[in-house]
Image 1 (cartoon, rainbow, N blue to C red):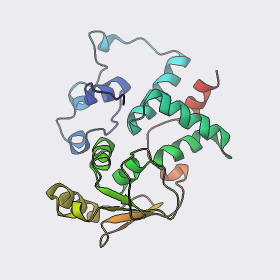
Image 2 (cartoon, rainbow, N blue to C red):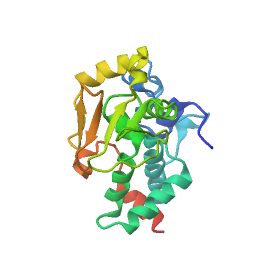
Image 3 (cartoon, rainbow, N blue to C red):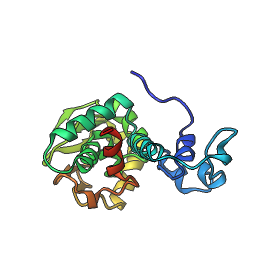
Image 4 (cartoon, rainbow, N blue to C red):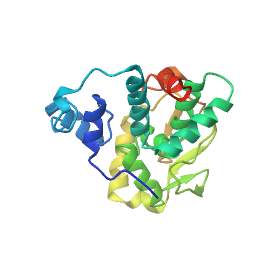
Length: 208
């Protein structure tokens, strides 16, 4: 399967904002954006003013990179969001938030979405008691996500579970310390999705 293999910090510098792709490192002085707040490349400090199309494109790329979604996947999510009732941009973000890797990250059981994807692929999580190793699996209200029984003995998962117990997940999720997992209480509303994305610009881009 295709995936991005370049520098993760380069993506934040390109978008000019923290995308929190590397977990704890993004909150430390080691963050590349803190040291070099300009775009990567030899012309990074001399970028020209973006056109209307350029602004829309950057917003789409920002959303893709935050959730770790490839271009074709993103287009498919957008097409699905268009078919749903309601506002297309909000539907798009809602679909992305419902991904299993994002929910694991939101529950605090991974320090980043990239780490969540890796843990899911390695079979460390169960959804409604069944093994699911597909990061893009879409969850619904009532679904329960928990750490697999054997994985609860892993030092890495133990550390993550301890951190998750100290955090407060978004209102649409509920964390259960005893079960080392959480439940999807409802579909997330736009006010509950704290991503720095102007989704209406993405809709305008794909509407051209």
